[in-house]
Amino acid sequence: MDYELIDFKVMGDETGSLVAIEGLKNIPFEVKRVYYIFGTTSNAVRGKHAHRNLQQLIFCPIGSCEFTLDNGVERKTVRLQMPNQGLYIKSNVWREFSAFSPDCVVMVLASAIYDESDYIRDYQEFLREVTSSTS
Ligand code: TYD
Image 1 (spheres, rainbow, N blue to C red):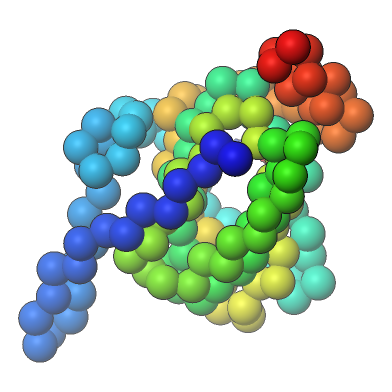
Image 2 (cartoon, protein in one colour):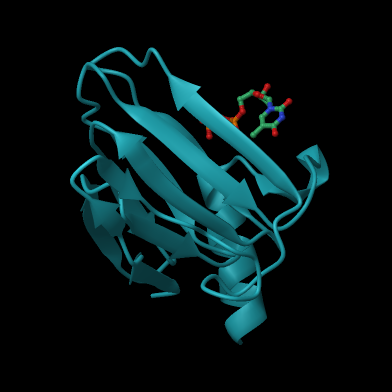
């Protein structure tokens, strides 16, 4: 399964904590886009897509949520609940995220600007593409 959990160093003192994320330094790509999701309802399920080329680093600086990752063969669920832990996802991984805490903020750092043609939004199409890329 093409994902990795990255624990970032927390630089803290008695006044608070700080985490620094730097492209090509402590994450494996250059950051071209940042977006964030907030105000999610508790029963929402988001994502439901894969990307053909995009790399992403996802973390919850506030609150928590659950990511279910699927490479066409297996499914894994990861809970993001620490502000210094990021989920690194490469291409061709179907993702759904849900179980949002009421305060949840999901931050995403992405390797490319928004491109709808990079999305696979149909699960059967995703299975076709991952099967043909591995055969
Ligand atoms: P989507 O990626 O499907 O959201 P999620 O994975 O959180 O469910 O995007 C939702 C909408 O926002 C969709 O209409 C595309 C648009 N969008 C942009 O315009 N720019 C962006 O950078 C992103 C991520 C989404």
